[in-house]
Length: 464
Image (cartoon, rainbow, N blue to C red; front, side, top):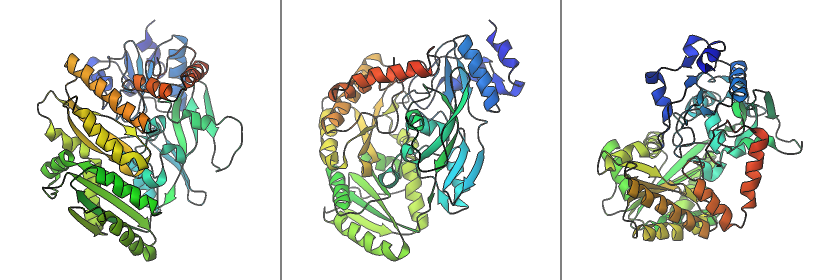
């Protein structure tokens, strides 16, 4: 079978890549995993072409890997051998906006930053806000149930998806959900697709809820000597009935990296910074900020301040969103890579979890940086390690396993927003074991068989 020849009957010459130099970039994503070169990369122009590609691959049992922005940190989009990659790059249109019903219809390849730039013109925004929003796409973030900086107030992607169009592995096109907030139609197939990591069907467009932009935002910055105090501070703020829009933290290594790359200084005797955003109406913002600031200061920060200056706030916001690129300067050699853990615990357990992670690392001696979305209990453990060192990678996997177990001990989860991909398949099993729910894994496998009986979609990811 000449798959390239058959694909040329579906796609124009600009939509089919098969030369080695053209397809090499598609063998990797933002993770440390090295994929294989696919047979070809297809870039369909519309859903009909995508459907025909899927039907062709299904009939010939060729594995298919869907490519959005390539920002996965768990290897969710790297292809294996003898496969076809489908890039969603041309599915980049915003199709409809209804500000009365508060939804937008966007194709799967629309980047979140472009979506919000468009919505901003009308005074609205799409709340899910992963740090990679400059590159991450609608389809990719639905597939991993992405969260991000604003999840403390707005939740993750699952809260904002009303419906979608999908293509099944056999090429059939269908739609789940719709444009209304209420519907009772049996099994919620829309929800089933969220977090499925491209293993069930190909998302081609989505109906997304939108929200009015906050009228006024204030920011509190606080620096502490102990990382546990950040967890205590956020817990106290929430206990007082104040829900922050953003609650982020960065440890000393992260602070040092943005000092070197962004020129943003910090008190030298501090070990962690807290960023807390409060959103409200103009008339009520100042009292809320004052209450939150008083709580923050009750834990004796080394330094703290409040600002409502948009320019200063944007500078800090962009520094936090770009922290992974900044942390590259903290590598001890060019061979080092940063592997980012993604655990989550109930916010009330944050302080003890952070302390136990640091204690755990005393047995491993990794250089690590702790940061994350502390408002919803999401901790990112950035590990500096070398993927080419087999023994060191075994040790790295063991450390990730131990930190996952810490999260489970405190009734959390091994994956908050990055998904499972290749990296966390063992951790997924550990979570089901810890919750005495291994039957869930079998249910997921059965669902996979119903949607994809030939196992061609994102083979090897999420589930064995």
